[in-house]
Image 1: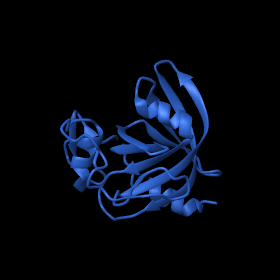
Image 2: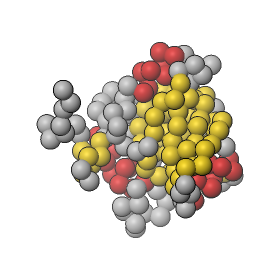
Image 3: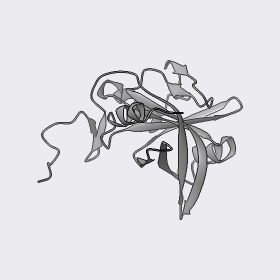
Image 4: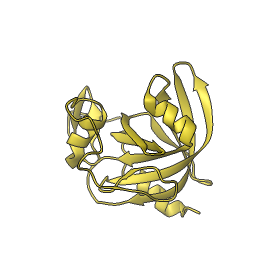
Length: 166
């Protein structure tokens, strides 16, 4: 059972920033950047992600029924670009990155700002995407720092160019 305070603490590191969704089936592991991630409920701790049906990651999540969400820190810009496919010469996106496993066996980026390890509990067809609902089985805020943001087609740390509300 996930402690609600730990769940809140982990989610506090995500500020509409860059996340990497990872999964694995047998020996095949994949990861993609995703911005469509949100908390769904506190008890039980659940999150949702939205993944395009055309992506191989979509197929693996459906088949393996596990995934992890890794929240990147500003110092992990290269990881975000790598998992977004912006560095095509890197064939294995996990190359040189420490990976661990928690409860489900999904690959977790060990030094990410925070991570959530999930079992797929439900899915909803949304046209060309699927909304996957995961129950959080383990979570950790592994480091202090600022989240990596994607704003106006730029990858960066929060700064004064982002408009404030109110």
